Each structure stands twice: as C-alpha cells, then as structure tokens.
Length: 251
Image (cartoon, one colour):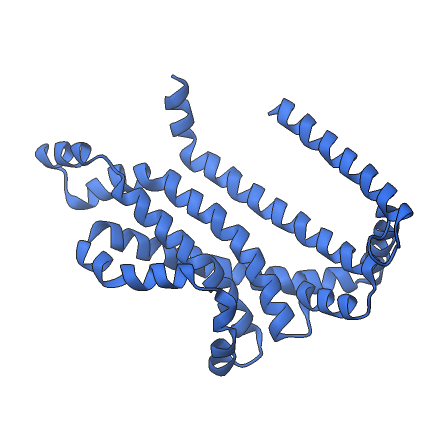
C-alpha cells in the first residue's frame, strides 16, 4: 500500500510538472498552466460559487446513487434466487445496460420536468443496471455444494440466504457498487449539463462556452477529485464487508 501511494504521488507530481511546462509553452487558452488553474479554483472557492454548486451536485449524486444501490441489489438478488424473475427481466436489464443513458434524458424531461427529480433519475439510470448485473453474477457464482449441504442439515431458506448466499455474493455486489459509483458521477455531470443551470455540470457548460479554460479545468479537476474520494469511500466499505475474503486468501 505504501509503495502504491508513493508511486501515485510521484505520478501526480510528474504530471503536474509536465502540465505546467506545456501550459507555459503553448497557448494558455488551449492548455492553461496548472498554476493558473489553481488560481481560478481558489477564486471559485473563495467566492462560494464552487461550494454551492458542488453541494447541489453531491445531493443529486447521493440521492440517485442510494436508490440505485438499494433497488439494484434487491433486483439482482431476486434475479439470482428465482429463475423466473431472471428470465423475465434479463432481456430488459441487458438492453438498458448496453444502451446510452443520455438517450433517455428527453423521456425523463417529459416525465419529471427540468427539476431535481430528473437529475436524480439520470444518476439512478447510470448506476442501477451495473449493480443489478454484478449482484446477479455474484449470486449465481455461489457454490451449490454449500447450499445443498446446508439444506441437508436442516437449514431454513432464510438462513441459507443470509448466512451463505449473501456473504458469498458480497464481493461481486461491492464490485458492482464501485462501478456504479463511477457511473453515478458521470450521470450527475451529464444531467447537470443537459437539464439545468445549476451544479458542477452547469459550470462546465458556462465556462466552456465562454472559453474560460482555467476555470473550466478547475471545475473538471474538482469532479475528478470528487470521483476519487467517493470511489475510495466505497472501497473502504468494501474492505470492511469483504475483508474475510482477503484473509482467507492469505491463509
């Protein structure tokens, strides 16, 4: 872990140096120096504009992602446990998973308008299907020998589910949650760029159309930082829930 952290720090420092050199050598409108981007970020932060829009974006992200996790895991578990449910939903889940989510934005506008509900729905759609598919995969990969052995000893179906199926499927479920978080951030930005004039996505549209590339890159870097932090938080939860798997592998 320490070695990986050092490598990450070194790579960030090298990228920052190269970016600064490129920004000072080329036209600053195309690639502004990192120092100029930092100054723009500081201005946005002090003015309160960055924090207020970021708060709106994080609220949308949290609501949409929470719904996607809860419903995605429930649907995935039902599909994995009951073959009839899987056969009924599989075609639609895979179709939506393959389709570009932005194609559904006009439909969401018709249903929910241009308010926060549409933004939450976009975040939900971006994250939901990958969570369902990973949960389904995790349940189907459970070793049937353990299930039959538990039933032969008189275990009830609820005990089989909560003590064998769910723990065994948890690594795949959390992998889906991690992927879903990354997709949710994309959905958050997409929704705000296409639907509203608030949030981080709207700031990207505003500064991009005005060719204020220093402020534009400052907002983009903020999005990247948010994505890294949120995914890291999911990884921490993942480690707490599935740490037993690492311990078994080490033993």
